[in-house]
Length: 352
Length: 272
Ligand SMILES: Cc1ncc(C[n+]2csc(CCOP(=O)(O)OP(=O)(O)O)c2C)c(N)n1
Image (cartoon, rainbow over all chains, first blue to last red; front, side):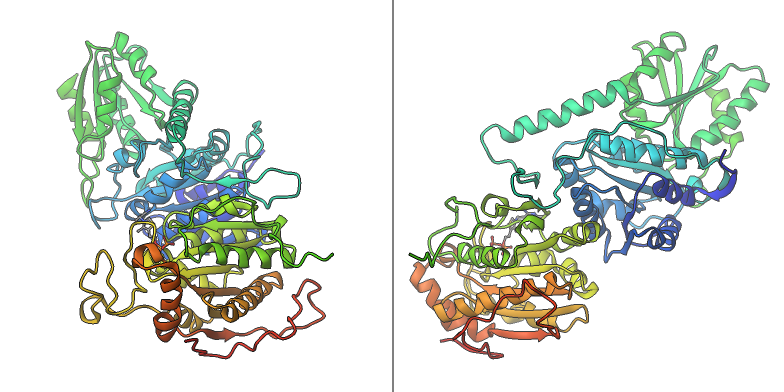
């Protein structure tokens, strides 16, 4: 049995990456995620791995692209402004069908914004943040344990679907400390990486990792192939947490850090005799649309709470039963804008 | 009968898409010959850039990763760190390497990544239709400098081989041309030397090859070749700007034998 540890969310990410067999990290410093490169710069050399502090996030994502093209597990991490810079590389990785894990401990914006907890990168993360019309898998941990578990899952999903996978959290989950059970890497059957470039041995085919397709119909077919994978993910990889939803008259939906605050508000509401539950998407892409459809078959009121001006709520509205009502409560990120449970409890009273 | 001239096995037996008079094909061949001579083909991973040479994998019979525009040196860094036993080279144009990819090349060079960079300087953006490049000569007309490049407004052409030679991580930096048979022989020699650096694990090696773009320059292939000798070499002198290795002739069984009769390659040699 593994020992219970008391660690920061960012450290949990780094520990999980190592447990998942990742030995290559490329990144550029930015608050509030620098614990990740700091941890890995210390630990990877001991494991014969490579840590590079790149000259920019642009360079870091391209180092990830190169390492990943050779078939190894590799990652990068950053925070919102840096993630914007990585979008070109993420688009190329998606187009070249390269696995790779990108951690975004997001911060507030637009522009330099601030370093406070933010969920304003939802659109950028799930709607294809770079050019060309692709998706990446986006996982949204809400606890230190999930930072660990979902980071390991991210590596597996990346390899299974040959896609970049993002772990999207914020400074609350990244910086807070909680108990962690550092579970061993789950046993999964992973596909062979026959596509990787390792040097063309005589008698073996030439391997090319690329996203340029110029032949007649080639690129269209490639795009259909990518979108076929997204359909499989939608069917097989949706994950969500349901908390007290069975009898709920009002269901709150929230992801990541704010879902934790919402849970406290829900317990306050339960104590006051109100039947309130929580549907917390864990995968933001693929979005757990079916779960929304199912709960709104019975419960007709959804209150979506986000640390932004309303982004995920669009996907919620597209997913719920036609006769369900969707309310939104958001706090755009910035110093002092993190809601307290009492504030969310008031919203519950308002919409119950 | 002895065959004295044949296609390098590292090059595929296909026709290139390059315009008549373009030097990309010649430079491809020199690189492939070096690959053959060192016997590294089976462990080579090429990194293609975005520009006229994007189809690297179509011509070289080696594994290739295609990098985003300008990012080849960062991609190659990732490849080499993950597979230190492989032979990794990038092949980049002057827009790719000296404009959009300046940060990536300078830092890969400065870290002393054990890779070989082939930088093809044709003083223009060939693929996109002959726009001004950071290497465009002052006075040179391009589709975005229709009145000629102006020093005051557009700056001066960047001499990458000299610039990179300043960096501590760079082991070898040279500029070559393929406009005359003599320069071509020298180019081959320097490319082989650049390869040898990586084969022996001696650090970052850089070859700047002056090249032609008759299509964008609006001249004939012969005129383009003459322009390299007349104008380009004037501003971009051929020569070795850094050569740090202390070769041990015993250390490398694959080291190329110096060709008898090959001309010495002086620093700042001007070919007219
Ligand atoms: C991010 C981005 N910006 C611009 C382009 C368009 N583009 C393609 S090739 C190129 C320049 C190529 O010139 P160079 O690197 O000198 O190589 P050459 O074609 O002359 O061999 C440009 C600007 C692109 N593909 N990606």
